[in-house]
Image (cartoon, rainbow, N blue to C red; front, side, top):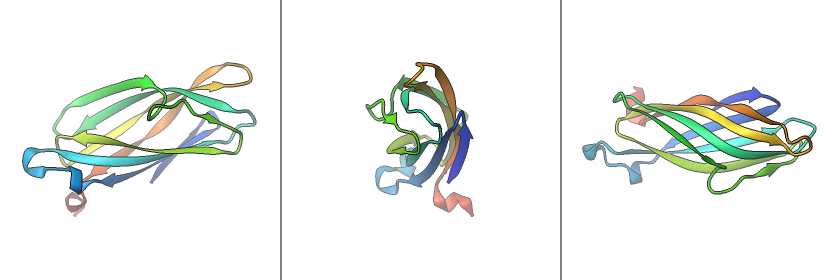
Length: 128
């Protein structure tokens, strides 16, 4: 698991290879990742959007932007957290993702970026 604290928001990510949804013979590798977003501030926040950078070890790079996460724009109270699962497909056995969330302070309506730390996606048999 990897974690990063920025602007009072801690983002932690854990990844899981999904062999049942992968087809190595066709260069299709599926990974799931679980994100936990903890609000360590004294005010409630809302996650407005996400911006991902996805690097595949075959040399390709993708950017993904959109509103919210998994179809929602969660509000996170002080001392609370929001957790979700999502996935990423790669064309090779290894890759990396990182990015930012655009967050709004509900009280002041000030928006700020929170860092999503870089995390690796790696087929288990490649780790040896």
